[in-house]
Amino acid sequence: MDSLVRHEVLSQRVQAVKPSGIRKFFDIAATMDDVISLGVGEPDFVTPDHIRQAGIQSINEGETHYTSNYGTIALREAIAGLLARRYGVTYDPKTEVLVTVGVSEGIDAAMRALLDPGDEVIVPDPGYVAYEADIVFAGGTVVPVTTSVESHFALEASAVEAALTPRTKVILLGNPNNPTGSVIERAELEKIAKLAVEHDLVVLSDEVYSRLVYGAEHVSIAALPGMRERTILVDGFSKAYAMTGWRIGYVAAPAHILEAMLKIHQYAIMCAPTMSQAAALEAVLHGEDDVRMMVASYDERRKLIVAGLNAQGLPCYEPHGAFYAFPSIAGTGLSSDDFAEKLLFEERVAVVPGSAFGAAGEGYVRCTYCTAREKLEEAIERIGRFVHNHR
Image 1 (cartoon, one colour):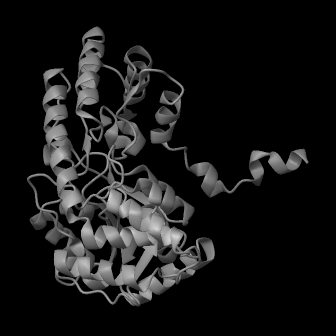
Image 2 (tube, rainbow, N blue to C red):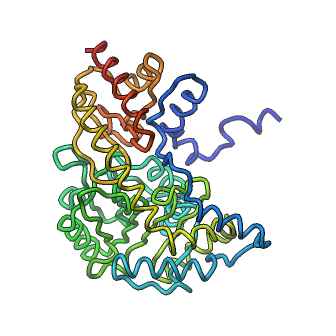
């Protein structure tokens, strides 16, 4: 029996992936009193009532069975309509839209559908923690491309081009970016698209924060010339509609790619939760006012935390997307891990070390501002006290 629990029995791919740096500090904070969490990127809003009621009604009407593997046709038609209105890109809801268990499942299924051992995937550094893990689990090779505060952490085409090799198969974009809040400008996105066409690459575009932009334009790379046929667009409802716990997202992609992803989805998942699909349909059809209200609130908090962090001696550029601030902690002389750990235990404020998001994140921490204004104000005061004590 002992031989079955030795680490040798585990997949080398699984052993190669370290646990999420986000969850580590969140789990510690959950055991402590009086902690203000700026750690997990989850809206503090409750899912709007009419969306909740749609899910409840689905249950009350007995809609508790499997749907099509693709998802309900009503939701897929609504998603296709949404993408056509937002980007002018047309997708066939029958064969080019897949409803997933959140954006996370969509990214994982895309990597497994595309990659063979040794295939390289270009990812932004810093970038969302799951990107690297999903690539490794699928047998691919991660090729991080460093972004910097000088370019507001937006991925640049010149850096992407320098990282290309004959093994490059996919460019993975997080736009807007988690953890930095950067938004890739149209001109730069057009250059990246040109590279994808010239080198016959697939682009996986994670656009889950696409509705959360402030003073900037979000452009979907799928809408650029020559890109619809080589782009896998993943988006969802967790962030814009405050529906994290419903676990509902979607993928829009050319039919031959989506069919391959469907194989993985149908064997691993079967279908997204039926009642969550009903709620998501209500969100698409009638949730626009809710999105606008939440975005306006996040924008106010964004300005508050950026100004507050700068005033406390933590230089923070202005993020234009998502709901994260990414201040530099270089002036404290602490590593990202040490800063986050000491801040948590000394001042009861939870942030995520930038190093959790890649080597280029060292020297920064991620602070979410999707929490109540009064908590943000208190957190800024505590952070200021901490910084003063560690200069």
